[in-house]
Length: 334
Image 1 (cartoon, rainbow, N blue to C red):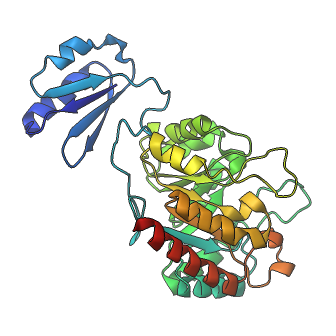
Image 2: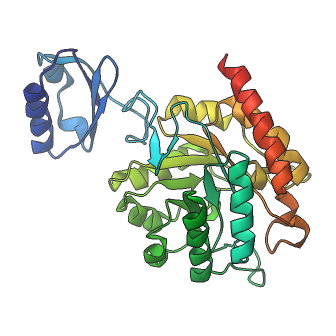
């Protein structure tokens, strides 16, 4: 349920109304827009009489939300959420490039890539220290050592870090990681999502390989229900009958999610296609579709990468991509 307040409502009136809602066991979320303040209510709102609410002097309108996701719903929060990651802002017209290797392999590798992508316009460094792999015999990441290598790259470049977590027990290792990524395979690991809801770090939540947008938003709701509203949604392709690409990039998800939620939406064209030469056109298309950012895999030597080399760009290729995507952004914003 959401209650839209009339312009001019005083702080005391709003505080009294919030106290009344809380006394009835409801969680209250406040969104202050440019013209109206909206109070979102989560819980058993069946106990609330809409006609009674509409009779309150400061309330302009009241409506129930039928969607199962509440906190992530744009009806709760009409304005785009802007997430601050150090000095970097994502969402609400702030477009960002997140770039780096699929897996951290050595200090020299990750630092060299970090410097190159930063020079091309990337504002955040991605790198995997824990890697969920289909085969138990594939490279699983350097784990704690990989985290330390990322932190050293951050110390030398100043770039905020994005890295994937696989187990809530690893949270202490992520204390200095700026954005915690939840991979596609863990999108519905609800116990992990609950633990991440207790943190206040930005969470980059990837859509599962075979999950609907509603399921993605419900996973975001798990995090937000715990009190952490810093959620970034990531479209990274879904599994279909097509075999020419690794996955099928669902770009229709971007404008649809923009209608449904106030959360930032980014796109990962690297995992979506699995083919390096397709990353550029899909990145440009994602920018045109309204994405708030891109996550791009970049490796200094893709043919010898320990993980996902086939979909990784070289630093020079990323430089071209960043330039062309900026041209698309400029064109669609006119």
